[in-house]
Image 1 (cartoon, helix red, strand yellow):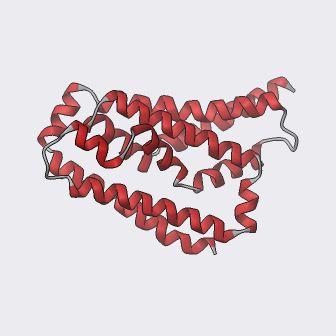
Image 2 (image 1 turned 90 degrees about the horizontal axis):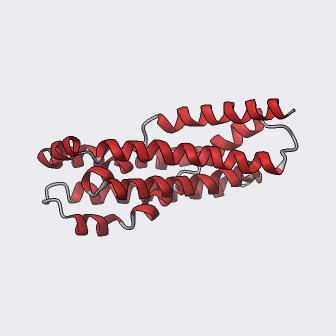
Length: 209
């Protein structure tokens, strides 16, 4: 039984890690924070993403996925809120693209790095649906407490270590120097990508009804 439970935990952890590695809003925001501000700020974003993962994975284990299906307007509302948050971040990045980099102004423009990471994760209710889907498919009907705690730790740790690694890479000297040379275009492209993701999430909110 213990061996089976450990294999289940490892399988879920691997599936979730592959999903985390796939580039998306979290990757873009972490990378840009690290290169535009500092590695430490990028790691704070990673910690915020991890905290958001704790919320969504816990909610999925408590059956939030079923609530979304029962009350689709709630899912739609969270999608709309998440889309508007991404569009706001995209607008701020694009708006300040041509301005010289100022760490204090840059940080204040989009808020505390930890909060930014947390809100980025919370802004995407699909994370709860993802967790709900794999939990339903792979977990037994009755999950022991130790397994619940281990599962939340694994998926949150995956989020934190991966995006911390992203932050360390993009906050390195050569990458940062390249960013400073090409800031205008990098920020504009980043803003456009985040804006496109926000619009896509906003458009997909219709499907929640």
